[in-house]
Structures are given as C-alpha cells and as structure tokens.
Length: 489
Ligand code: SAH
Picture 1: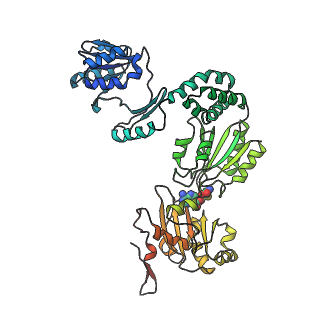
Picture 2: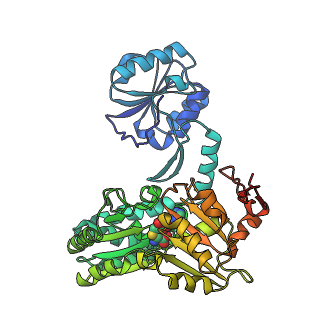
Picture 3: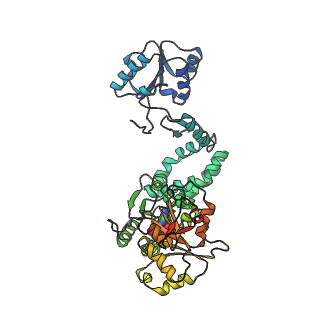
C-alpha cells in the first residue's frame, strides 16, 4: 500500500526536469510542461518533427542521442516517456539511486509520483488528484474549478507580487499584515484588477494600507459550528474562523471544520468538556481566553451548535470586556434545529405544535412535580431536552404522571446530523420499555411532542438501523399477560 503526498517541487537551473522520449507520449507531456520551458531538458534518439519544431520555438533544451546516466546531472525529476519498458525501468533504477523521482508515463508501477489535474493562472496553481482512482472525476473537478477563475486572474497574482515589499516595510508584524491582505483581497479591488482598472485597485490598496491598524487586534469570536454535519456552518463563521490566531474548540465540533477553515498556523486547542473524562474546567478556559487576548490574539471560540444555547457565552464575553477586546457572537444551527431537520420534523407546525422549548434538566427540576405539571399543561408545545441522557426514563414517567398523554411521541436523536446519526422513536409509554436499557452515545437529545409524527410521514433517507421510520404506523399488541409488544420492522 502507498499513498500520494501533495507538494510543489522547486525547479531551477540546478534542479531541472528531464523528459526522455521524442514520440507522441513525450510530446503530450512536454506540451503540458511548457510553462516551465526554461528548466526543461528533453533527450531522445529521435524526435517527431512537430515536437522538434515546438522545442526550438519554445527554446527548450534538447539533445539527440541514447539515454545515458550522465543525463541525470542537475535533474530534480525525470519523466520516462520512451516506448521501451526495460529502458524506462533502467532509467528509474538509476535515477532513484541518485534520489531523483521518476514518472513513467502510463506505467503506474514505475511511477514515484503522478501529475495532478491542474488549474493554473500564473503563479496560482490548483492541483487536483484522486490518487489515480478516477482521472475522469479529477477532470470534472478541474472543469468546475476552471470556471471560478477568469483567464486574466494571473494579473491579480502579479499585482499582489508587486505590492509585497511595501506591505512588509509598512506593516512589520505578521498579524496586522495578514489582516491587511485579507481585507484587501476580499474588497472589490480584485474585481477592479480583473476589469483592467489597476489604478482603482491602487487607490484601494493605498487607502487600506494607510488605515490598517498596526497594533492591538485582540478579539473573541464566539462561533457556532453547527451540530455535527460540517456543512452546517455559516459563511460568517467560516470567515472569522479563518482569521483566528487561536482556535479554542469544543468536543462537539466536527474535526473537518478545523481542517477546512482554520489557518494552518493557528494554534488549535481542544477545551472539550466531557462528563467523567479528563476535561478543561470553564474557569481554565476563561483563563486561557484572557491570556491570549492580552497577547493581542484573535480567538475563535468554536462551539457545537449555537454558542448562545448552553454554551457559557456570557461568561466568556465578560472576559473579553474585562480585557477591552472586541467580541462577537456568530450564531450556529443548534442541535434541536439540526436534528429535527435531519429527521424530517418541523419543530412547530400549525395544528401540532405552536411553540418550542429548548431545555435541560437541573437536579432541582427533576424532583419538582410543579415543574413537570407546568410542562404538561402547556398544550401543543414541542420540548427538546439537551444533556438529559441519564434522565431519559424519568422524562417519560414524569410527563405521563403530570398529565401528558401516554401516546405522546418522543424521539431520541443520537449524534444527530453526523454520519452516525441515529433515531429512536417511541411514545412516552413505550420508550422506557424499548430503550430504557439502551446506552445512548453522547451527544443525544430528546424531542417530545406531536411533531415527531412527521418523521414517519416525511422520511427521506434510508434507515441505518432496522428501525423503520414507520414505527408509528404499527399498533402495539396486547400480550396475554397484559403487557405490550411494540411492533416495528
Ligand atoms: N451549544 C450546543 C449545545 C451544547 S449542550 C447547541 O446549540 O447545540 C450539549 C448537548 O447538546 C448534548 O448533551 C446534546 O443533548 C445536544 N447535542 C449537541 N449536538 C448534538 C447532536 N449532534 N445530536 C444530538 N444532540 C446534540
């Protein structure tokens, strides 16, 4: 087994690309390598006429003759494009002995590296690979990426290159410089360059450079990461996350989000809280936030779901205020909303529910009958219980005792919206029988209310477990001893 590691190889006069071959295969390769003409050498016993013309026209170094190990002098990579496999093998062996990587065209077994599908606009290069599994897919991906960048996009790169020096001289430290570039690149200046209005772009550049803060940019962004599926994050969250110097993230945050949107050089610290496991206490998190703010850092405090729902938001905002730092809350899709949507359930719906209560159970509530009665008396309400796995049976019993109908639907959603999303639907009466002994994995929430019936009516995905969405369509059967069997397929 092997894998492909992506990188961009440096080439120059001492590290050239050598192509061996002069037929049609070599011609196609050399065509693709034309942008690197100054550092390309071609060697072959004979050349096709059109190839030879191209080599001359592009000023590409070439020599006629048989391959010789001396050809490997000052070479970084070799492309063996002869139609003689044993010669290709010899080339590979000798090149590898010198630490030179070889690509044998159309002969994967002899390849140390493969070429990606490439989208190229001057120095902007986007390489696409499926590790050779599907060149067609790679080509289709390339095609859609191509459409994102107008042909003259290289003008943008040239403009940025021409301004690097002055920006480094004006903004000597890294963070203000990065913020400046971010602001400039996401302003309308890029569009102006693409339209050919370089002077307008210059004006924006000068204005931004003059006004860029050189000093304290400390900020705390409380960012909602959504509840499991990494695609459930907002555009604003992505923008601020990718600006952060430090990312403090919860256990519930999808790991893909950090990989996709956080800066490579950002410090990433898990501050997850998990019952019973080693964890960082809120107090420690607060200290950490204060420390980074004092260092002038931009902190993304990335929280599962929405930062304002059971997220200690106000405590952390207080730290920003004490430290005179900017702060902002970026909303996210809270678990109740995400899980319900994934299950095809609208949380309020005319005729079934006119309000929604997002809640958790504090120890005082659990044994307070008045509390349960108040829930039961709220007609037509959907309840979503967070952080309540250990009270799952109690919720059912107490709600029935308090007067809610025993056939009120309840559904547990485990690891909602992730690839491990599981649903367990029942009624308040049957839930303890069916799932009382089930150890739900964290995170799990419970939705109680008539709207849960929509699940069977709106099912839109194939079920993971054998438990069909149609549980409510099956009647419960009385057993001879008066118990009940709940039928589901
Ligand atoms: N701020 C988060 C909630 C944090 S409290 C939000 O807005 O979603 C943690 C609780 O949220 C968990 O105990 C669980 O009840 C619920 N939860 C979070 N993500 C979940 C998910 N993907 N599936 C089911 N429940 C989830």
